[in-house]
Image (tube, each protein chain N blue to C red):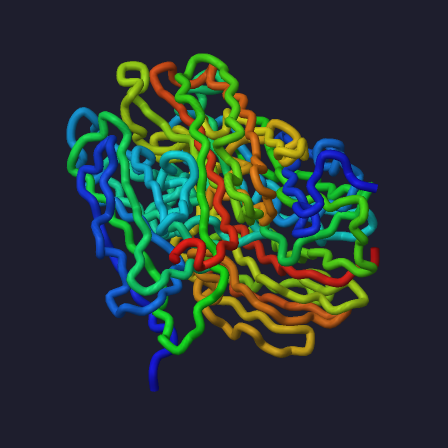
Length: 315
Length: 318
């Protein structure tokens, strides 16, 4: 008996992605069986984070970003999206309640699970470009593993596909010892398309650079809540949010880590954003009591999908 | 009438996301402490659908002290108008599954898995702030009718820490338009509990929940049970409760009609160590309930506090 929709996994990697970015080579992520595919998720695995060399003794995954597209269709908005803002890790204990990718701990795997499976015509593969922040040391390999199911040839192609979409807001990196405010731009967490965008969730993390005062352009070692004891950054960042229609989404200044609750760091909203609509986040960062040499950088992503006519993308 | 500033499509397709947050402080062995009801009320005077409730407790401890888990001693009770959501003051960790794996071999600093230390020395005269976080994803979204507030209130038991604890609660949900018609019946969550007295180590005593009192469906309609939550806390050295790593407890769980659901099995099997919960989907008829029996104390290293909760929903007329 033929297996219906047999599962498959394809993997590609880049080593030492630079600030210019490296693209997962073709045909690493292509279905080798020359069949249409449903893609359920992409997992990003890091190798070498814990053994990264000077100048960083520790290196967190927050220093790596991705840009994704499929044909003419962008899957990520703006420039690049931090990989760790696409979803959570596979292992609960790697999330912020204990150490996250600090020296000596396991390299994490982050999962971008699509709200709805992505249809991939035979012969196509998504284009994933991985980039690292400046001053990221060499020795890190980033793997992208695509999980999905092959579609039997007899199945009719859909007229519309659900295209995943992710965009992100980077807050400014601010040092402990003072208080700050920050705000996302309209373009950061925005639906740039002419179609409605289903917003499944927001993902929020506060990146930490323990060497920020000496190396402000340095890398993010970890994340608030790790065993380094940096949960204070997330707890002392307060969030309010509104939509492009003036609708209040977060009414009061809510602690960052209560809104983007561990271990998923997600706020599931399951709402629709009309064309050109956006969410704007206001941050109040009460870092006065925190270590003055440490930098904190709140980041928020918006994850969802939209319906796209198949022929508009792959004709 | 069109609601100003809000797009109809956004609302028709599921509501506009809205997060509400409030904070309060609670001392050890405190009286009931409510949150600011104004902060947790939908200011738009429309129906508000609550999808999940995030809870966090934090307090300062001396650096180097064993970090406790507040989940057992911090207890919360929810009410919605005349509708009871919590049977009584229920440990905050009994509302939802454990958030984090427990495959670490130690339960000392950085503490049991729901608690993490803050920045050492950064707060309160050099003491360390520790946080415990908990999440209750409601079995079914709760429709809070216009003008009504879901009210949480807290008590804190004896944990030996003395400091004033800061507790924060966030409702994550969606607000609906004025035109939204509340259904005549809504799904209201309900949490029943069995909270026996503390048991000394190796005490040769059975514990059994009270029939038709603990974990009973007190309503006139069936209670759809979604989850059973089992947690155990063992007091370690001093007064700081720590988790029991290798829980040897055997449990028997049966219904009012003597139908056995669990027959003398190690608790860590049905209530897996990762989530401390067993997801189910069955009805308890009106007036009936579950009875839990455990041979207490045998094999435990210190005084133990068991908590057991039944999480479900029932239909309630608005």
